[in-house]
Amino acid sequence: LWSGANRDEVIQVAESSSSAVLPQGCRLLGPSEAAIPRLKDSWRFNALVTSADHRILKEVLHRIRERSQELGRASVRLDTDIDPRSMM
Image 1 (cartoon, helix red, strand yellow):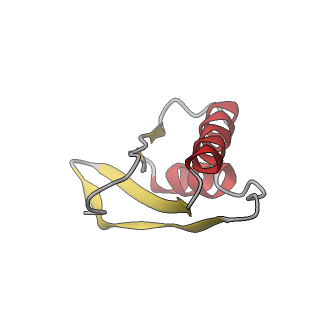
Image 2: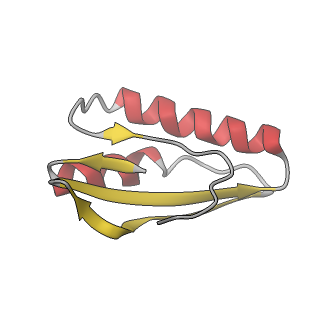
């Protein structure tokens, strides 16, 4: 989940950081607006990464985190949830 006060910055970071080449056996859905796109003056976008192999999943999440940090936008926060129960 990427979030921040500036919608355009959040979209840019979410799209740029999730555009990494995915290994075989991995699927990315999103990023897209969260079910509740704005909460407490913060815009929210999420993505779902799926893989049957937890090692591949961890590697992809690591790449996304690294890319988000490289973009250097302190105003955009990235939160990850391994095995979420709900996307709400």
